[in-house]
View 1 (cartoon, rainbow, N blue to C red):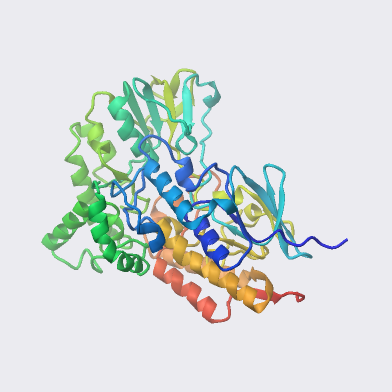
View 2: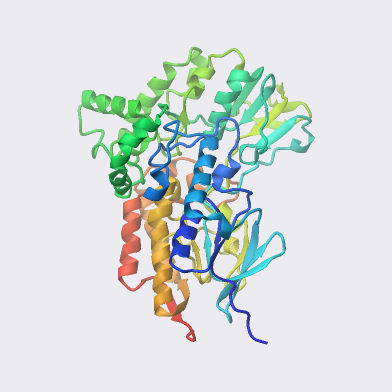
Length: 539
C-alpha cells in the first residue's frame, strides 16, 4: 500500500491577520493551501471579541493590511475602530482577496502528528477529520486561549457569567443589571466604560491597577482618509522600520539627558497624540532605566489622579508609588475609565486587602463582604503567547508534544520553529515580537519571511526543515540577554507568563522588531543557519 499523497502543501491554522496574509500570499504563489478556523467568521480575535466596548488599541491606518487593493476603497469611522468595524473590515478583505473559498470555518484543530516516513503532518480536527500537509503553519496569535482562574464556587453562580473572550455572539444587555468585573486589563477597562453608563451597579475587582493611557479617540470622515491615502505607502513602509511596528519612533535616547521643562513638553505632546505614543514612542531608556521610567510614571499618575474625585480611589487606581515600572505590562487605552469611578453606581474593590474567597450563588464573596451580582464578567486574560500552541496536541518526531517540549521554558529558533518538530512554523508566537508589535505589521514582515522560506524550499526540492537545538539555545540566550537589559522582568505580567499558575517565568516576546529582523536576515543570508534542510530522498 502506497503512502498517501499530502492533501495540501500547507495547512494554516487561524483566520486572523497572520493567517489570512499567509493564505493570500501562498495561494498566489501556487501553493495548495487550506486555512482551518475554529470560529464561524474571519478576524481571529476580532471574531471572538464582541464584548461591550471591545475595540482595537492601535490606530488606523497602522492597524490594517498595506495592500492598496484592500485600503484603496475602504474607510473607517473612528481612529480606533470597534469590533463591529473590524468585522466589516475583514469581510472587505475577504471580498478583495477571495479568501473564504479556501477556509474551513467551525473547524477546531485538536492536534497534529508528524509522520516521518511521509514527511507530512497529519492534522486532526474536532470533527474527526485527518488532513495531511507537507507544512503546518500556525497563526493562532498571542491571545487565543482564555484563562479562567480557579475560583471556588464558580459553577454555583445563578446569574450570567462570561469570560470576555467567550462573550455571547448575539450580545448581552447590561442595562439595569448589577455587574461585577474581575480583572482590569484591556477588556476589563472597556467593559467597565460601557457598564458604567447603563448598569444599576458596577463593581470592579482590582488586584493590580492598570496603567491605562488616554486613547484620544477621533471621528474620521471618508474625505479625510481619501486625502491621507496619498501618504499611505510611506506610512506602511515607515511602520516596518520602527521597533514596534507602529508609525512612531523613540523621541530621544534618554529622559534624563534633557531638562525637566523639555521632558515635560515631550510627555505632554505624546499624551495628546494618544494611543501607544506615550509608551512606544517615548524616550528610549524609559523601559530600561528605573530613574527614567519613574519620570514617565509620575507624569502618568498625576494625569490620572487629576480626574478622580475620591482621594482613596485615586490612590488605588494611580498609586503614589508605582506598583511596577511603567510600561512593563501592556498598557490599555481608555476613554472614560478613570472618570467612571466618580459615578455613584461604580465602586472599586481592592483584592490585595480583600481577596476573593469564593463565588456564591448570588455573587462574589471577598474576605470583607459578599457582592450581589446579576452578571459576572471574567476579564481575566489569556494563557498568552504560548497557550494557543500548547493547547493543541502537537506531536513531533519522538512523540513529545509541543507543550511537553516547553514545560521548562520556551525553545525556538527565530521565534518560529522548534527542534523535533519539522516543517512546523508559527507566526506571532513565542520569542517573536508578537505582543510588543502591531499585529498587521508583524503579520506582513514575519509572514513574508515564512513565505520566502517556503518558496526557497520548493525551488530547492527541500521537503524537510527543522530547527537545531544549538540554534534554540542561542536564540533563547539572546532573548534572555535583551530581557535582562530591560525592566520587563520586574512585573508579574503575561509578557513573563506570570499570570498562569505553574507556567515557566520568562519573557515570552522578543523586544524589538528591528533586532528580530536582523536575526532572521542573518540566518537566511547564511543558508538558513540554525536549520537542517533535507531534500526529498535524503535524511
